[in-house]
Length: 357
Image 1 (cartoon, one colour):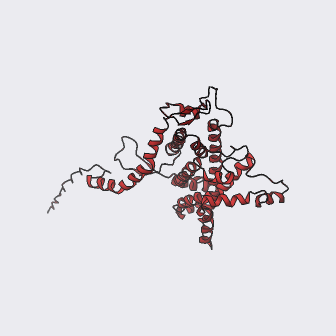
Image 2: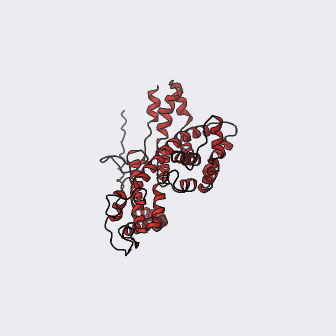
Image 3: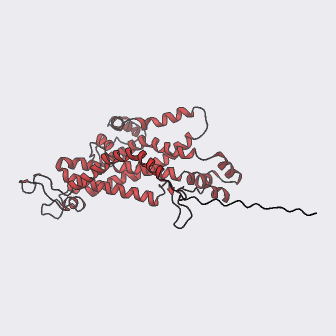
């Protein structure tokens, strides 16, 4: 006696007409409607002022000509406002602007701004990692420690500058501490280099909590099982930090560095209040933003050209961070790959655990 088994073939499901990972028309319109208020606000507060500044940067300033003493009417300026800054050309018939004039301060101000950026952000990354590691541990009173660390960041910048102005006074706390170790008092806001380091110290004190907060958000995403696996594989603390912790917080760390870098590149209020926007020879702490404010008093159109240059510098730095520095939080699959979904940046920490030590 034989048994016959019939095989039933299920009809194949027709493929969806919608593109994989794509959005239908209704979802696209809904998404556009949700972001429309943000687009309007950005257009009003960013796009329109930027376009206006670019247009004004190609116009001459009206007023007295310092070279001839005559009143000059405004009009098309071509690229003269840009050469005024980039080439220190004041249009006085000389090869360059006189030393100490505003037109000759662009490159020194750019150098000072970059100096503040590199030193401040580097110190904030190191201290921020340290504070974030402390706040990420389990111990009694952790909530109080987190709140205390965030206090400097919550204080307004103007108040911070006034606070450190008292600390850096000639008879202030800073010079008293130097006296304990046998160092003569310094003119913190009067001499060039002390004034620069005074700005850096105040900036690091205020914004390190911001860096620590962003890094802490990345640390809290690392599961304890990852560290347990590394410990089983015999990884040392340094290997765990360099091969697991740093790779897993790379994206939030680079985003934090990007935010702080862009913030320091446009720093104005702290050096302006702390040193009067000068310090030392009068230009020791003059940043690009301070130079823009000073130039507005001389001529608004040339100040618009300087503002455009500063914007291009900041945009270029942001592009470098996002394109090459790992500050982009998403990666798109390579061309030719199946599907067009955007995926989160892959994390190399699993490979680090597999490698052991």
